[in-house]
Image (tube, rainbow, N blue to C red; front, top):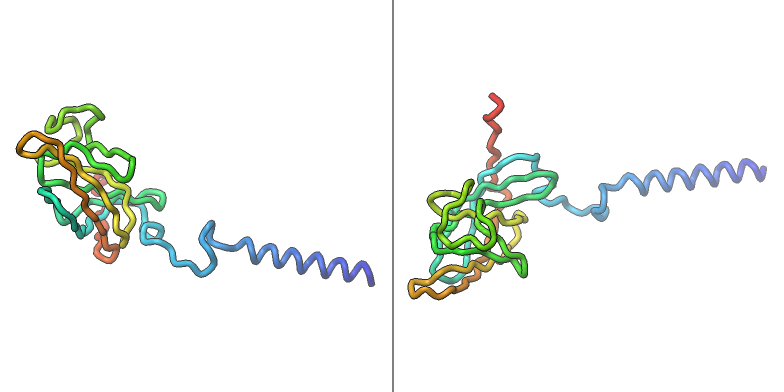
Length: 163
């Protein structure tokens, strides 16, 4: 009888352990996955809502690349005076440039018309980015902008390079 009781108790413990370990990674039970977690890897065209002050303007659409459940938005500033951007203490150079490059100097891979910035993106979440630019009087100025990329507007762009 004692043996049977131990077997039943061990079986219940294993069943409880198996049920607890079936969760979805680090996400708490019942939590909703983020849009980047539900989107397949690839490139999306997305509308970008931009608010903020300053003399700079931005394209209202961006390419967003999702890879391994992480998203990066390629934000295009329609002003060539931008030197760099920052999120908190993290400095972000225009795509194709290196730190220390003179503002306005075209680098390989950079959008030759306007500077493009690769910003870590979270869909449906406000992201504050500070842009540093050269004003008309030659001074470096800064302006804060808030970007929001609605996941519902994301349009998947099929990879046509393999055809």
